[in-house]
Image (tube, rainbow, N blue to C red):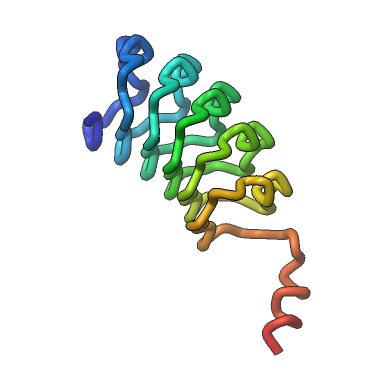
Length: 135
């Protein structure tokens, strides 16, 4: 558990803890997730809430046992297509970021039962369409 330690980067040693099933780096000052996170293939939970993340490395797509990915309260501008290999993903929390659209690949995540993307400045669909749909 590496929560609330004011970390600006994850310790390099974490990449060698290949038996980890849960990695909690919430409430730090991370601006990047270490590329070596992709080596942690047994991870089922990756919790990165309340950091300063603008992107996630493509290597997150290698975490094919991941069931929970939480990146809420960061500065992410998009969720990339590398989410596609994450077939067992059940919970995705990307609330309160800077997301303007969602990738169509989310539709292929058939195990996904919880998706939280509230508090994002979505542009697709345009705001006018959303407002018109509420009438």
